[in-house]
Image (cartoon, rainbow, N blue to C red):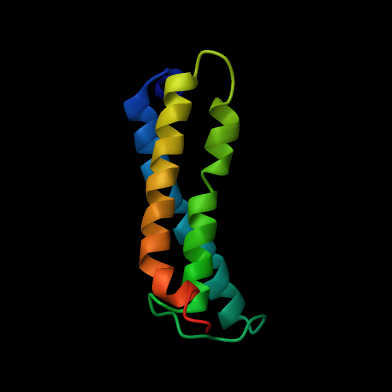
Length: 105
């Protein structure tokens, strides 16, 4: 755990790039459990579906934990790495779903 306390841009980038994948898997698993138990209707889970778009966005937003954790003194480089990675994920999300967001669906 000592590595998470270091003030380093590469550590922040690593955390910021990997944690949304973990958050996506957790949220996807929760949605899958809810569908299989009958609490939620099944929907198409293709890459361009509304449900997948929401799950992906929640996964990206899971970086909020790390932004809050590193928003303190002497961790500015790690915070910068997490924020840069979050912005890269957000740009990728927006580029992937741009046509779905603005077609009037």
